Image (cartoon, rainbow, N blue to C red; front, side, top):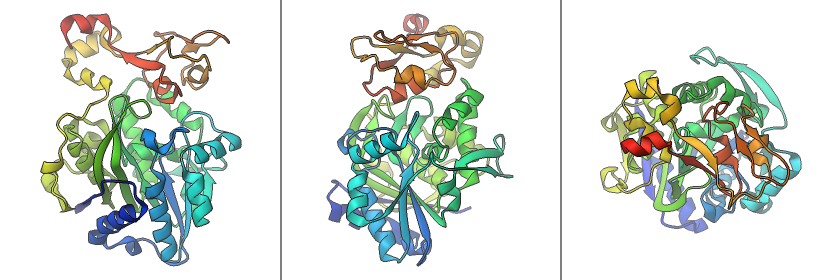
Length: 381
């Protein structure tokens, strides 16, 4: 297939500038009108991982959301914004999340609809999937005439990169994500396969990436905001991730989802396979973009890694000085490898831990970090 990605500059979250940049990014792809028709119910899939303010760079910025909502309304279609946040979610907590992230203000200003993906689910069977042919997805995803995905450019402790593909894990409602983490256990490549199977179940019709301010380091929640100044758009999630990871200084084919997409024949294997409109890629590459700490495992020789994974693999630890003893990490731990006693910091059973890093991802205080074992400190890896 032909892969096309557009890159537009956007140096701030000024509403007018953001809308103009998004329109510029969509023009070479045929504009939003090439996928949205009058009367369509358009699901705008956001990244609403946690109840963090926009400046934390954890979630899709409300200015980007507002611009897309307005554009959908201008085409005579019905916009619906939504997601399933990480961990357990209730109607009350979801309302609080919408308010904290600035999305409730967008809903109030534009009059668009909101969907909570945890409300209703549907089982979907996908023949083109490889391993996870039957999936439980949010009904809002299945019912939409059109899906526009708005990922944030961020790192990810388990998958290395949160972009257009990883974003779709939010199709799975609530604690269903926990069940799938248990299926994939410690195998990041199996997890990447799950993400691509979700992608095959319902590809977004168009994806617009918020890379105005991204996140580097220990993402997707506790990394550092990084000004990038870009909007990226594509009708191909896999091509968009290839370009985005290149800009973020990754070797794209070392990112599990990008590599596996190429091996499956649904993603590019080189930048030359992608037609890039707007800004050229090479001058935009950020050479000092901080990668997630777990990527250091890529440098360990496979023989050593397979023979001594227990000794050399990264593992989550609790920073007791930052822990507020809320117990969220233990509550949402897929293998129940954490013991929590009220008034005390959680204790991790490393033997049961599957290294999904949900605890690190969901801790509201950033009190869970990924530690390098002593053996790797000795060998300098």
